[in-house]
Image (tube, rainbow, N blue to C red; front, side, top):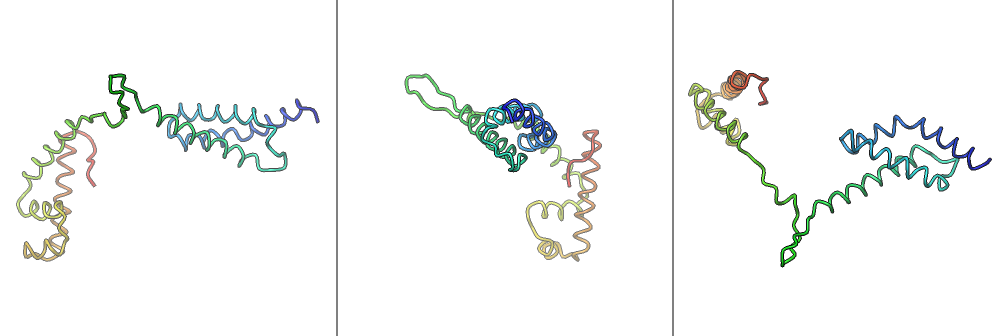
Length: 178
């Protein structure tokens, strides 16, 4: 068998596994564009090193190993690229990810809205709900409020339902609380 015939057979077998490889790449990367890049890198390496593949072994496993190792190597490269050198006189190594400051303003506004909605709850629902929110167990709430456990569970359920409804009304979208 000539080299061209072997390459042709290898290409045919590779193409038969193309759908599997693309889905495996997407599973690894969780991103369509990176998955396509990973697929292309895997194809390049597989064809470059096809002479190392033993014809009576499992091509799918061999290609999966190449793809997994390529993914890991690319991940390590991206991690290193996240580090930035500062060329000030002291030459500090800065980690750009650690210097990002998240903007929590929107979350703070939503939390303020939630606290206002809780304050608007009827007293008999608000106190069991707040105690549960603060980490008290049902039996502790029962003891503190001198209520049966069924009543406490019911009031917490009704408080959650009321809050979900108010949030849905406030934001005009499905409630996000569970």
